[in-house]
Length: 227
Image (cartoon, rainbow, N blue to C red; front, side, top):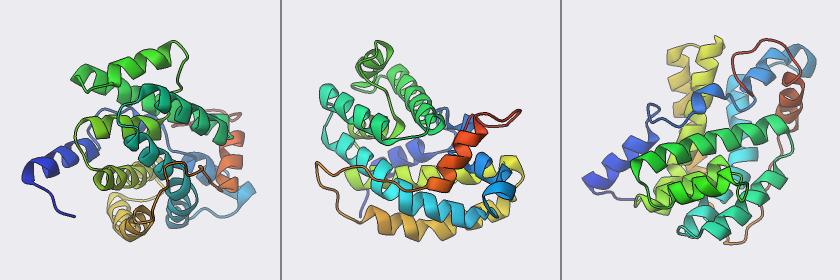
């Protein structure tokens, strides 16, 4: 993979954790899984990340991102894919987190003037689309001129980096351990990203313990993250 300096800078901007996407409020089940370790089994951050890459991101979020990217701004096709993501995400806490993250990213790109973002945000507002994160990522990253491989890499990196940030905020690991965990995860992201995606590939995931934890977490008391 080769980049011009300009393309690399755009990729760095949109992969940066300071880019306003709303993801700081969500742990994607990490808080629930760690807090319920006594009921669901010992919690291991590295194992949690590995499970999320292999059994959620690689075959569900990554696939949705790639298919969205290839629609090249076709809003009706994106809305249909959005409905597929909604139907395939069984736990409400994860569905709502994905929708809220996606809506936040859409809102930011709408304000930045990214092609298609404001129109798709309007579809979300009137109930014609759900605005799931992976679908929105494909829409906006294609619109700003990233290539597909770079968009997928950013998606994988952001997923792992957001988990590491959540773990630090929860006190599960320190900042240095977080960076070491991200470094260990990068080859897994690269391996998953290299697998081909068919234009009509189904979305698949299997993270039952995480989903159970999120469902139980929704009925718990005070917590730091929404899921």
